[in-house]
Length: 416
Ligand SMILES: *Cc1c(COP(=O)(O)O)cnc(C)c1O
Figure 1 (cartoon, helix red, strand yellow):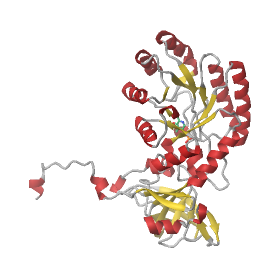
Figure 2 (cartoon, rainbow, N blue to C red; figure 1 turned 180 degrees about the vertical axis):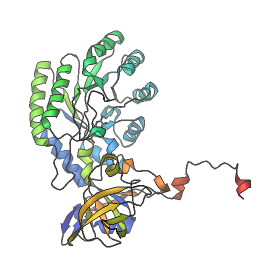
Figure 3 (tube, protein in one colour; figure 1 turned 135 degrees about the horizontal axis):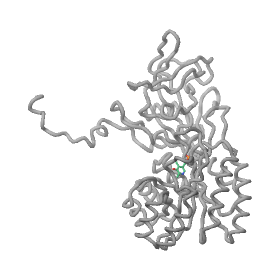
């Protein structure tokens, strides 16, 4: 969102306040031009000709976003059989979908095999069972390289006591299972968690994975996962994707020449592709002054955007109604009967009750983590594409709240 003639605008000159008038509030808005910019940036950063970008769709699975991302040329990374089904419905071929579950049953994995998607296994127990049941189905194995990457403990997945991946120290066991079952490994994978700040850490993880790869014949791809950090603050730090691209491409080329074949170099960005495309628009209901704090209370809460409370995530907040006013200091809170604080001591252009504010970086893990807590409706979603706006998910209604409740007649007589 940029300020043009004293007003915030989305790409193509779309007015965010107009969207609130048209679709109501609170509202999630996704600007596809930003997804496209990020996709191209990633592709340009890696000159390896067999680069494959698998969009990690748990970040945002609205089917229209999936179709848009497919139109760019990306493939899909999924973590549940439901995401696999959404991907197929959006038009991805099974061969374009990677299924990377954690702690799911063999029955669910069998469903993925049935539809023919790529399967990534991350524990020895399931690997052994899988090998006995589907010895002819080539698979990928998720390795845990034991590096501490990731913005905080909750989103780091590569450390020694992580539940994700098969430890590099257990590679001999992987080999034993392959030998005993006749399984064929065609891919190796790692994903060390979100928010990688240090390229050196990422590259040392990659080095470990390449070392493992040398030992396996017949690989066709190596998947380096994701964890690319995007800026959440205006002065924010992000992964230097261009430098990473240059260095990893060079190292990968060297590996492939020794290995004797040019493999696919795969990434699975979620946040990197969609985070910055999203804005969450909400209305300020109340300005409340206590002895020490000025609260701005909005018509939303942790039911719609939980990252600030769940991860201490920082989301920049702007006053869309007053782009250029003098700034004052606010603590922005929600309407849920919990302490749901979105941001403390934020400098925001002076807010009046009724103003529309926007949370930035609301594309990834925001709508997807929303709930009906306090029996409130989930918001609508709108996509902006080529200067036009499209409703891509309706706001919920009371019917949605009641949809799966089964009302039994037991007490009707007593309460009548
Ligand atoms: C969540 C996830 C990703 C995406 O992570 P981001 O930080 O959003 O880029 C990639 N791979 C796997 C296996 C994941 O679970």
